Image (cartoon, rainbow, N blue to C red):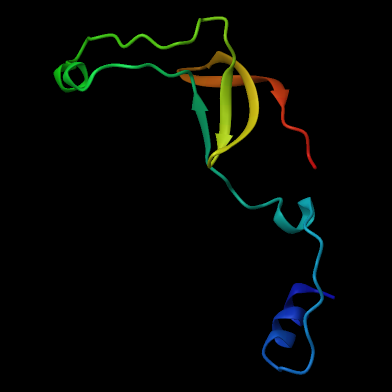
Length: 99
């Protein structure tokens, strides 16, 4: 059953639409926002309020640590920071398994 036929069935009240399995064909074109998280740090509120241009905040991560990639709050992959022209990129080293 196609999505357009299902849409027509939604309003007639007599037939329930068939549940369509989620797959790449159905959702593959949907865009999601990825976030890369380098690490975390801790400062006092006083330090936070006194931050100025040029100050450095130390993170609890070493240069060798992997960067975590998230979609919303879900960790989906890890990788290493790379240069892509004038931008940053992430080379994937580990990816979440699909359940």
